[in-house]
Image (cartoon, rainbow, N blue to C red; front, side, top):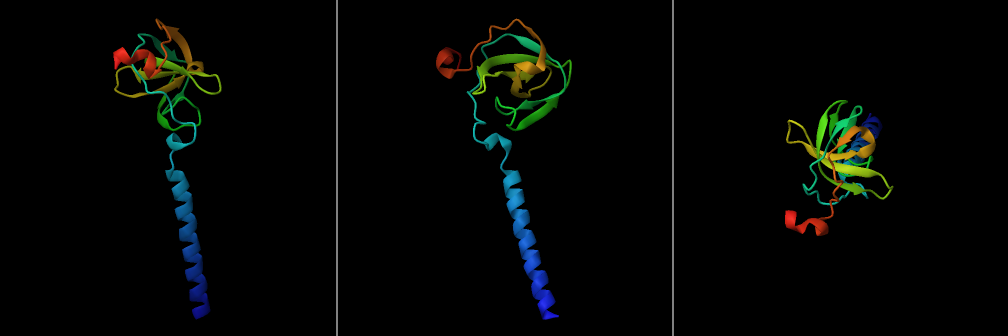
Length: 130
């Protein structure tokens, strides 16, 4: 009987350690992944765009980064500024129309882009706007 109790106790400890390791890695959000930083967004663009489908608004200008919320076809996004990530993809920092929700959206996910000057998010270029 005591051998069974020891075995059960060892299994319980191993299971708890495994769960802690898994939850620890899950707790490390995608926003903290290497490469998930981005430029500091500044509002220097008057453009807007319309979503082409359902896509996640991101925490940084990379598909692998964390999600802010899911957006759907037809939703309008107001542009703040643009950046090109290390893969050469263009992303725009936006506010979702009718909300206070902000985040990054890939240019590839927009079906309509209007009135934009594609102003860069580089803080150095826009110090007078901060």
